[in-house]
Image (cartoon, rainbow, N blue to C red; front, side):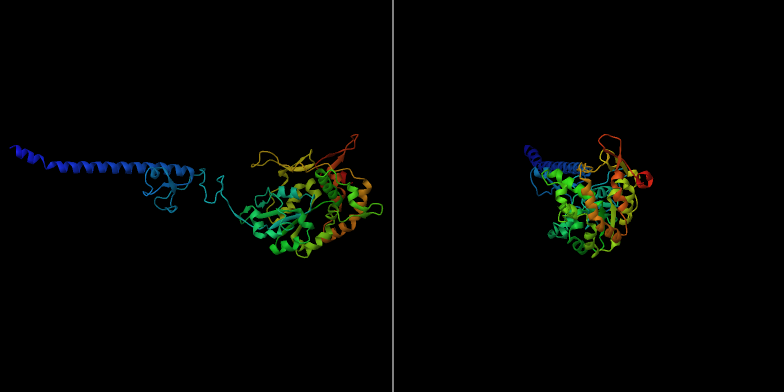
Length: 401
């Protein structure tokens, strides 16, 4: 009887062990599966928040690295509209990051193109003002610095030049400013070789006033330079002007314009009055916008006159909390020059000015003669100083008389 009991009790032991082993294996598999699903769901949730989906490594990692390390997910997935595809973001929700985003998360829209328009001159004529004013227009993207490509860095090549440009959309114009191009002999040919359709903007100013402004800027950097009179003349008694001095030579506009007209028709060159840019910035910028073929969006409402600087400034916009004026160097007080020296220089420039007026079909003589009157109204102060004010010739006939 004992043998029977032992014989019946003996066989179930192997089956019970197999059952226990199976239950243990199944429990372990379920635990691993649940843990994996939880990790993936958590990682997926974080990746959606961060905009960079990531997945766990495959089972070949081994050890704890399997759960700790991760790699970018396979970009392939359901396309919008297919089953399982994410729904479109609701209105007002933040847009997802694009693959071309920069470090700040903003997308890199557009491409870098060679400029379609250039502000080629002239130095101390008002080129910086034109650049800052036109940059307000949404259809214009401009390089803020002066690359000096067509005069100093031409050997670097067009690819280098293009790399400096801001990104633009197809509907936008790329613009660049370097005032020294106008007096660089090789610049017209080089720009023509880049594109014969390039639009050129030249800001001109009374040559005498421009030369004094040029000298004042240099003097602020090099206080030990000779006097303005000493640099302007080879022999003042004989009235021999030193045309080798750059401050004098730049103002010989007709001479430099000849080089440009060999490559570009006059219709492709727009001349801005530096004086009217101060007295009527909206009017001058309206003509610039017409020349560039863009809608007149920059108007009177964008400007106010800063009496301290004696220049118009841009009012604050939606993207700017404060008004934007030109740099500290703009509106700098000019050095005092002997009136006889000014008269001699006016006589020197007269034939060049007349030829310039005839060539471009515009007479700047009125604005150049009234340049100082349009900026300063002589007050009854003891020192004879003048107070800058916003002046428009068409609205102030008393000054013209």
